[in-house]
Image (cartoon, rainbow, N blue to C red; front, side):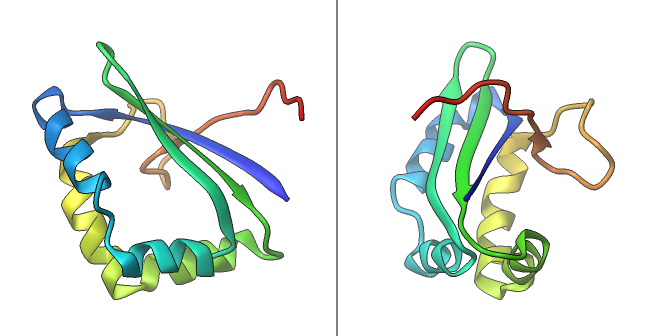
Length: 109
């Protein structure tokens, strides 16, 4: 199992809508997350900075392939089309990132 964390900004005017759509995530999106070997997935919001922090645990054997399969899923693409306009990527992210990756510097079980 490997842990992943990432961060992105959220448009202040879209906070209520972002919370609303995530209170009722589409079942096919949830299934795709599970089928991509992702567990313990959470998104946290930090206000007033309006930063989203996502955390998940990956239990598969090929993270890149599972993420590519998720990105190719038509329902996931529709879900992202709903969410992405509300998000504000960090200017410091790498060229291929939407959510900026983070480095784990501490963990305890």
